[in-house]
Length: 209
Image (cartoon, rainbow, N blue to C red; front, side, top):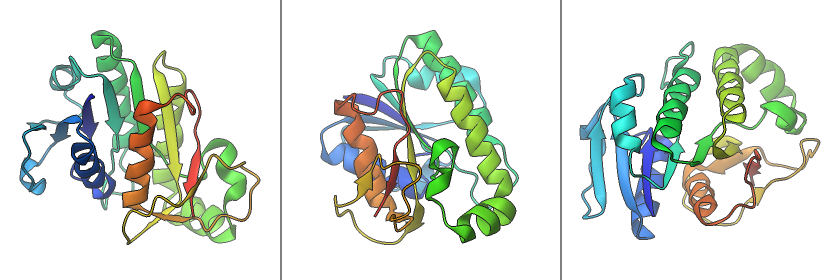
């Protein structure tokens, strides 16, 4: 499958690119800083660009079969890049007629709020990461209002580790048994699984151990 990955040099993005190439996909990695993606592969095309530059985004999306969005703001806790960048991607996809969209958000948004513990509800998302959380909520609203064939992936907190393939997904928002953590490699594994299934079409499954 031909897919473009926005946020390809981020923590999860690199795993998505690596695993997609391993699976035989043809990958376009969209990034502001190509030098950070120190990998070469016959099926890899690296595109330098800013997700806020609509013509460049449209060019990257043209001819793709799927789009994966893993935008992040790094250490900038008050950035709106997730929501605003996702808006640009949605516009580009609708203009190009590309339908399949898979976007990484975070557990806690929407009906997954009930799965969080006190620490994540009131310390992290209620105080330290409140702007990041608000950006994710806005990002999801733009996706859900679109006409795309979307799936939103809501992982728990990222931890170091390899791909295990052993994780829980799609559990109810009132579930309190989740560990609220998962490796980026396993998040990438789940994201790429969505390319070949409609099981979570127009849904936002949580993801955790």
